Amino acid sequence: MTAEMLGPLRHPIHRFVLGEVEITSILDGAIEMGISPPFLLDESDTVTAAI
Image (cartoon, rainbow, N blue to C red; front, side, top):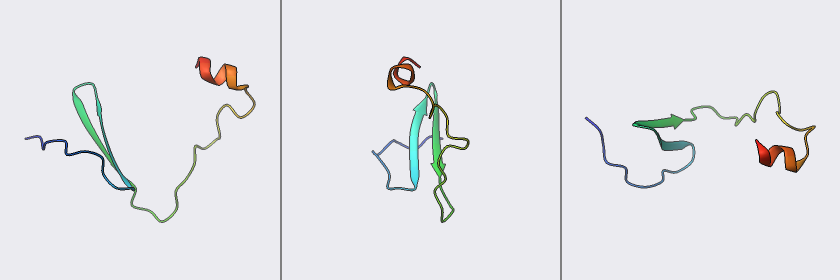
């Protein structure tokens, strides 16, 4: 059974559709971690936009 998408949820809960699957992500920790390792820091904005 699938619940109806009722719009955006408040942070730290994120819900999105990926193909035919609905994904719900819940951050249950106290610290928000960035991308680790930090990707593309040594690349230009042009290269990053191309990806």
